Each structure stands twice: as structure tokens, then as C-alpha cells.
Image: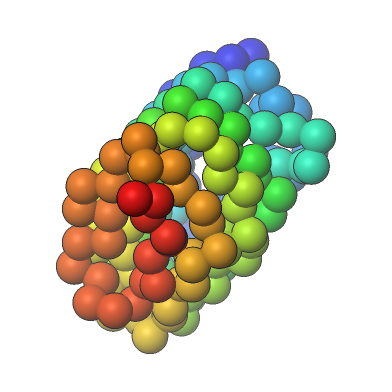
Length: 169
């Protein structure tokens, strides 16, 4: 399938909800990941989710608008594993992690700093209000982003929690 839009949106009413086996899904040809985990795990106290892509997979001309927006909104501990992502070009990551882990004091996002970024992409509001009550910091300085990429409001309301990519001149 190429369309994963909203497939786990509002998932998990129980406070012990979990998704198993996602790391074995073949999403190589995926094009639409919009709202995939929107408001997922609304009642969990803690959540760990693994969604790696592998080195042979890449996302090109894909939409990830608000993919993890409002993810685990009430959890106190959130772990997300997004290793091996290769963002090839023309991807829309608008609001991908906005309002991520709103109440979490413990946050860990593994692999995000190692994403391979290529071509022109839209990073608008990607980290708007990201993990606001945690002391988690992201270092995205190794991302090399083309000058044509859009990054309006990239890390709004994060106040020095994210070392932004090198925006090309």
C-alpha cells in the first residue's frame, strides 16, 4: 500500500495500548503518512514505539504532514525509534512532530538526528511545541538542507531545545 494516512490516528483508548510489529512493515513505497499517529495513545502513561526504515528504503515525494502530531498527549514517558529514515526529496514534513509528547517529562527520540536529508523539502512547523515540559534536546546540526527547502516556524515554541539544521544560503 502507499497510503497510511491516519491508520493509527486516535489509536489506543486503554492506558496500556501498544502497537507490535510495526518495525516489520514494508513502507518503502509509501507516499502518504499524514496524521498516521495523530493523537495516538491518548491515555498511556508511557509509550515506546519503533518505526525504523532501513538503509535500502527512502521517502521521495511523500507527505508526512502531522505524522506524529499530538502523539501520546498525556504520557509522562515517550520513546520513539525512527532509525534509518532517508528523506530523498519533495517531502512534506509540515507539523510532523508538532505538539509531540505534550505532557511527557521523559522523552527519547532515537535516530532522528541521523536522518539523511536530500533535495527540497517542506519542514514548516515540523517541531512546533515539541515536548514542551521535558528537558529533551535534539541536535539536528548534521542535517544538510537545501536552500529551496521551506522551514517557516521550524521549531516554534521550543526555546533552544533544538539545534536546527544548517539552512543553506
